Length: 121
Image 1 (tube, rainbow, N blue to C red):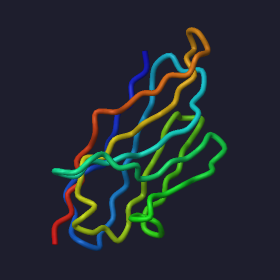
Image 2: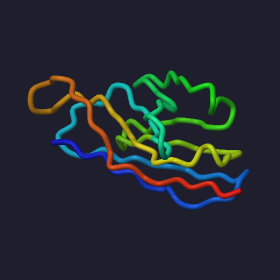
Image 3: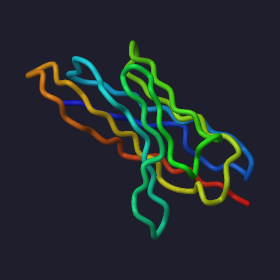
Image 4: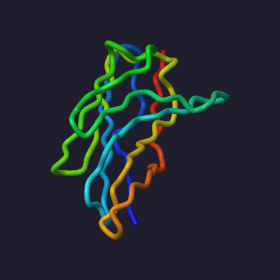
């Protein structure tokens, strides 16, 4: 089994910054793509940013130039640096990872429980 645990959410004023972290643990052989998603109140879940095992990144247009996704493969962690935060960034942020299982070498995807980010104006 694999667990993803997010941390770093909280309350911040407009224009501020937060850094989210996600730690993966369990029976992990290796991790392929990792991503951050978010769900704002009353809205569908949105893909925010992705990063491949090799470090190639992709961002939603709404966060380009403000958010930076990174990862530490040795620690099985992914990060989301969020700058110039806006009220519309308020959401629950979820970590998502495609993990190669140590048990059978198959790929499975896992989700974290989410961390709340609230941006006040």
